[in-house]
Each structure stands twice: as structure tokens, then as C-alpha cells.
Image 1 (spheres, helix red, strand yellow):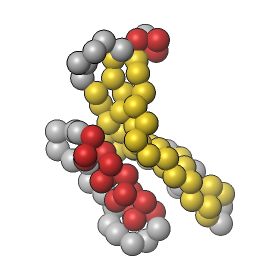
Image 2 (image 1 turned 90 degrees about the vertical axis):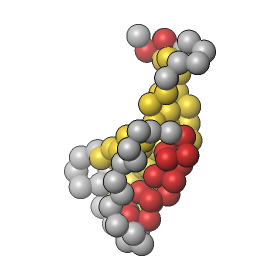
Image 3 (image 1 turned 135 degrees about the vertical axis):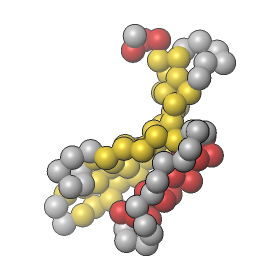
Amino acid sequence: MIDQMTLYPIADDVLIAPGGRVVIRTYGVGSAVPDGEVSYRTWVTGVRDQPRYWHWGHFEDAASGHRRVLEWLTGRGPQPVPAVA
């Protein structure tokens, strides 16, 4: 199954926090078949003792969602809400 999936990286960031590092990774996951459906996600690890994630409907939503997650983690914005597909 994994060999039939393709990852489409969108953005990766690392923040250094007093308790360690926080990794924010946004990517698309789709089948290896051309014109297959792609699911977009942002994963955050290293914060609050558990990973957090968001699902996005489209590439543009994922890119802006990644920025909103960074703003939230750095205290410059509210916690993001996933975009409606």
C-alpha cells in the first residue's frame, strides 16, 4: 500500500522551544495513479506531549493553513480550523 502512495511536500518548519523542538510538516498524500485524489495534511510534533494534525481540502488551503499553524504556535494568531473541502 505504501508503495502505491505519493507524498507531495508543501512546507517544513522547525521551531526551537524551551522544552525541545517543534516540527511542523505540511504535505499532500495521493495514490501513485495519475489524476488520483490528494489529501492534504499538516502534522505538528513536539508540542503538548502529543502530535496535532489538520486536514485541508486543497493545495492552497494547505499552504495558508501551514502559515496559520505557525502563527498560532508563535502566539501571533488563533488556533487554525481546517478548511472545508
